[in-house]
Image (cartoon, helix red, strand yellow):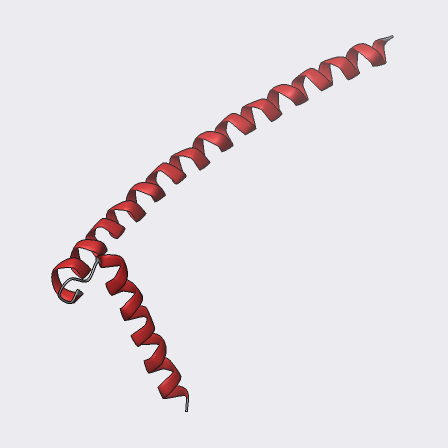
Length: 82
């Protein structure tokens, strides 16, 4: 009987520790994700504005300019490999 009470108490402590760890982990990971989304979103806004102001051609959208620039970069890399 003593062992079963000890085992039950041990299980209760284990569940409490695991629950506490999960809450801390979720808080840390959730906080990191929010910061990451904010930083990446801010960077993308700045990059899009830069492309729009300096790299787009007449009548070209930002997405089209990015695709064109990526294709040009790929061509340069392919040409330098020869």
